[in-house]
Image 1: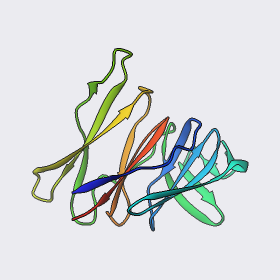
Image 2 (image 1 turned 180 degrees about the horizontal axis):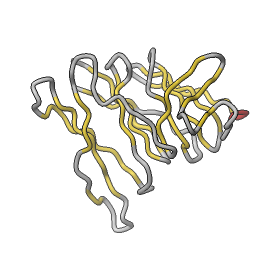
Image 3 (image 1 turned 30 degrees about the vertical axis):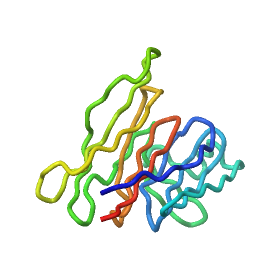
Length: 158
C-alpha cells in the first residue's frame, strides 16, 4: 500500500513538477525552483532565483535542465507521466467529488495491481480545477500528484 507523505507548502502557483528520480522531485513555481526530497517524510529546498525560469525549463519539450541534470516535467504545459511501475502497478484517474459549498473538489488516482484488480485509491484536494497529473517515480517507490497549488506524494510500504 501507498502511504501519504506530507510535503511542506512552498507557495506560489506550480508551473510543473518532475517525474521523481532517485528520491527527488523538482517543482517550478512562481516563487522558485523547489527540490523535494522524498522518503518517509519530505524536505523542500527552494531556489528563488529560478522562479518561472524558462531558460532551464523547456516548456515545448517539458524538460527541466538544472545543473546538468535533465528531468521530465508535468504540468500546465502537458507532459508524459509514468503510469506503470516496474512492479507492474498501474496508476489510473479515479472519481471526483465535492467537499465544500465553495465547489472545492477532491480528485483521486487508483492504484491497480499487476493482476488488474484495484488496490488503493489516493484522494487529494484540488481547489484549482485546472491541470492535474499523477506519476510513479522511475523506481516505483513513490507516486507524486501535482495540481497548480499543491504537490501530494505517497511512498510504497509493500
